[in-house]
Image (cartoon, rainbow, N blue to C red; front, side, top):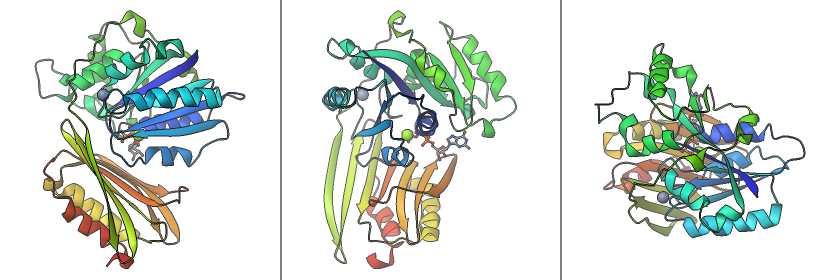
Length: 341
Ligand SMILES: Nc1nc2c(ncn2[C@@H]2O[C@H](COP(=O)(O)OP(=O)(O)OP(=O)(O)O)[C@@H](O)[C@H]2O)c(=O)[nH]1
Ligand SMILES: [Mg+2]
Ligand SMILES: [Zn+2]
């Protein structure tokens, strides 16, 4: 049986940051397998994690929909192959923030996977800003009232309240008041920055057997398209997909194309400010000439860091506007590489 942790949480809450920290503190003599599930088809997180990959970890990506529905059979095959190949001491699965966490737990406990997977602590990472205002159970518009967040809280053995550097004074009090109403009580509630938690929390046994949580979220079929564009002799792969209330789209460019970092920043900011785009997430890695940069944008902040992944430039965006005209974003993006003009 392989000890397995599931890390869940909303889009951009800090799941990948947490995993990056955990693998830099992997106990000696252990080998870990990390599986990152991404909603879009391109996948950026596994490249970011692989950036600092240690020799005692392997990172695999399952992109293109939630692993409990669209990518279910892929999860079974991937898990079996990785276990056979690496005989890992631990598997950590990062679920997509747009998936169905209870469905993933059901899948890990199905008659086939329950024979090889032992579920250790399920960790839910939440933005502390969810508690900027006190939670009012009558307020149906509150994010905490959504089925997805309720599921994430119910499933968790450990709650990680992340982005404490952005916390308002009252947030911690509101948060304790909220968790006092949750039964059964959580094993641990941790307050963090950058999702930094001790690896000891991974080894706690999950209480999931004692919970009867059924996935009540109906998923719509996941449909995706990919095309190849040729611009000035450069081939560009374009992807788009949609499911439930989100759509994602993105591009992969040749490593030979250089982009202007300043222009990218200006255009990304403009796109986030543009109401029509309704962007909720942007992740990218770009060849910016001398350096390669990783761009990581959420609705409440962004950061840009140097990237050691240099195989190609890639970008993935998630929008709430399913009628979004992607070509207007595409124009902005292509204008950042002089060889595409
Ligand atoms: N200010 C602040 N930013 C943070 C913190 N933790 C993570 N971030 C930033 O939040 C953004 C999203 O972090 P990720 O770790 O990629 O979040 P994620 O949950 O893996 O995102 P998805 O996989 O897209 O759902 C990045 O720009 C991080 O640098 C924190 O404690 N404080
Ligand atoms: Mg992530
Ligand atoms: Zn699903």
